[in-house]
Image 1 (cartoon, rainbow, N blue to C red):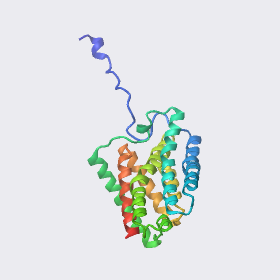
Image 2: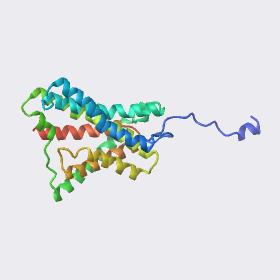
Image 3: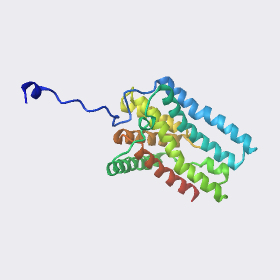
Image 4: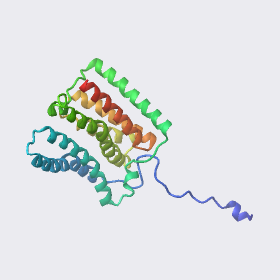
Length: 245
């Protein structure tokens, strides 16, 4: 081997995906604001309006369930549409839908959830955290098994996936490409808590904002939406069981 060959640096590793939520190209602030408006207001309003017309009764149980489902659909569809327009590919992985190490991911999830439970317990000492589940009240799920099952699938199965794709994959991921962790986590966490103000209370918004920050930390630490989705499913399942129990 010649001296020149010995001195030559090793070839650079092939480019890959970032291990965290931030990437070399992210959506701009304008797209994030437009995404929030589209996902939370425009898409649910349009699809919900169609559902109400088809159902014939906007106050019916079916219409209430469908409206919630369309809200979740708006959270999922909007990021993919924005990424498509901006040419950010592959959208699935860039939104955080990647594999993760099971033991490490679940370990961090349990640690983050433990912090949330401890904080919620301390918070409840000083403030009342009791709140009604307005959606359950509206559709009369306590009296209708079919509606209860449908709402359970929506709240425990669909909502966590949709909300994590939007609030962690799209919003936090976009902010993280421009800001350090704490500002990005706090902004996305507050937005996440704020959408739950309807049918809730300011105490619930504070706790859910904290929950959102912890979910962002979990995403940052594992580089995947898998652990945040699992933590979100766990919390929603417990809250749903306590509400209907």
